[in-house]
Length: 452
Image 1 (tube, one colour):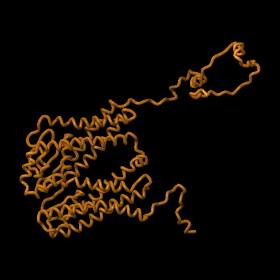
Image 2: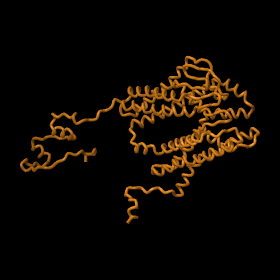
Image 3: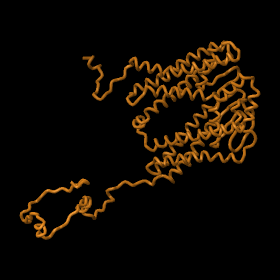
Image 4: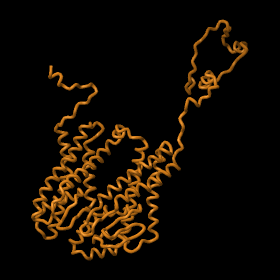
C-alpha cells in the first residue's frame, strides 16, 4: 500500500520526462566542450607560431594558453606589475558565435524545458571546468612566468556570463516564437525589440564606417607606428593586436557618435572637445584625433538622428496605432541603451599606466536611449496609424425597426411583380388562384455566379 502511495500519479496529458540517452549525452558533450576545444586549439597554434617566429622555446606555453583562455572571457589579468583590464573583443565575439551555434543545433520546437536546462547546463558547465583547470595551470606557471593568478571569482563569473549569453542567443534564434507565446509578451514590445535590433545594427555599421575612414585619413600615422616595429615579427604582432582590438575601437567610436566621451587615461575624445594625452602605440589607435575638434564634427550627430527616425518609422509600420508605435519605439530604445552600456563596460578597462581606457558606459547607454526614445517615439506618433475604432453596440440606431435591419442585411433579389394572370397564361404558365395557395417556408440564398 505504501508503494502505491509513493508512486507519482501520471496524467494523460503529461509528456514523458526526457532521459539521458546516448544520443542526448553525445549532443550535450559537443555543446559543453566543442567551443572550448576549438578555442584552445586556435590559441595554442597562435602561441606556438609566435614563439617559433621569435626564436623562443616553448617554456611557459601552458601558462600562456591558460591566460589566453581567460583573456577571451574578459577576465582582468596582471602581467608583472601592469594590470590589464581592457581585453580584445574580437575573440570573445567569435566564442559567443560558436556557443550560440552549438546550442542552436541541438534545440527545436519539440525540445522540452528539461532538455533546455540540460543544454544550458552543458554550455556553461564544460567551460566552467576548463576555467578551473586554467586557474590551476596559471598558479603553477606563475613561478616561471611574470603572470599573477587572476581573481577566482571574476574568472568563474565572466566564464558563466559569456557562455550564458551565447546559449541564450542560440536558443532564442530557434525558439523565439515559442518564448514570446509562453511569456505572453505584448505585441508592441516584440515590435520594439525587433526594431531595436535594426537600430543597433545601423549604429554599428555607421561606427565601423567612420572608424575605417579615420584610419585611412590617418594613414601617415599608421605608417609611422609600423616603422617603429622590430622587423617582420613586430609588424605581424602589431597587425594582429590591431585587428583584435578593432571592435573595442568601434565601440568607442559608436559612443562618440552619440555624444558620449571615450577616454584613454588622461586623454578624452568627444564631438565637443579633445583632451590630449599618451596613447598606446597600436596602429589602430591612429583613429584618435589630435588637436581641437572641427566644426563639421557636430554633423556626425545626424547619425543618431537618422537611426532614431528610422526606428520610429519601423515601429509605425508594424504598429496598430500611433500610441502603440510610440511605446514600441521606447521599448526598442531601452533595449539598445541597455546593450550599449553593457558592451561599453565590457570593451573598456584598466590598461597598465594609462589608466582606464574605453567609453563612459553609463553616458553611452543613457544617450543612446535618449536619442532613440525621443526621436523614435516622436516619429512614430507623427507617422503612425491613427487607429480604427471598434464597432460598438451603442453605435446602432435604436430608432430603426428590427425588421428593416434584417431586410437590409439580406442580399438583393431581382424580381418583377406581374398583376395580370392573363400574361402568365399567354406565356404558358399555370395560374393558381390565391385561395388555393398554402403557406410556404422560404429561405433567401445567394446564387452562384453560374446562375444554377
